[in-house]
Amino acid sequence: MLEQPGAERITTAALAARLDVSEAALYRHFASKAQMFEALIDYIEDAVLTRVVQIVGREGDAPATASADGPQQAARVVALLLQFGERNPGLARVMVGDALVLEHERLQARMNQFFDRIESHLRQCLRPAAGQAGSATPTVDAQVAASVWVAFALGRLQRYVRTGQRRLPTEHLQESLARLL
Image 1 (spheres, rainbow, N blue to C red):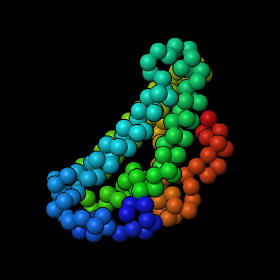
Image 2 (image 1 turned 30 degrees about the horizontal axis):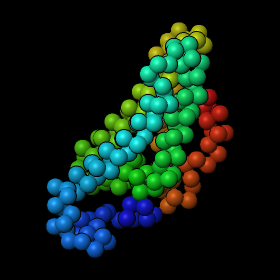
Image 3 (image 1 turned 180 degrees about the horizontal axis):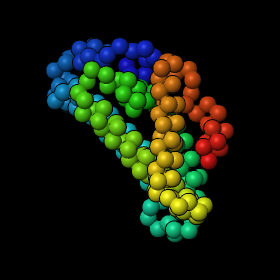
C-alpha cells in the first residue's frame, strides 16, 4: 500500500482488508499501527546502516587508506541510500516522512535520527580528506560537506516520492556525485 503513488493515509482497517485478514489478526502481531511502522524503520536501519558500516570499513581500515578513499566512500554511501529508496518505493515514503504524516511523532524522530547517523558516517569519511587537503578546520568542513550530501540524498528521495516514483533518485547519479566530490 505504501508503494502506490499518491496513496492516502493507511489505516489498520484498510490494511487488514488489503491483506484479507481481520484487524484483530494485525493486532495479534503488532500492538499498534505505530509498532508496524517501527518494524519498517527497523528494517530500513538494519538494511542500510549495516551496508554503510561495510562501506566505511570501520574495522581494520588503515587511516591513510580511509582518508584517501573518504570522498569515494561517501559517494558510495549516498548511492546506496538512493538505490535502496528506489528499489523500495514504499520505504522511501517512510524515509522522507511522507507515510508518517499524522502518525506518532516519535516515528519521524526515528527517521531523523537515521539520517543523523548517515550524516555522521559521511562526516567520518570526509574528515580525513579535509585534513589532507590542508583545511584549517577539517571537522567543520567535513560537517558542512556531510550535511550537503544528506540534503542532496533527502531531496532526491523526496522528489522520487512526490513525483509518484517517476523521477528516479539515481537519475544522473554519477554525474551528480562527481559534482559533490
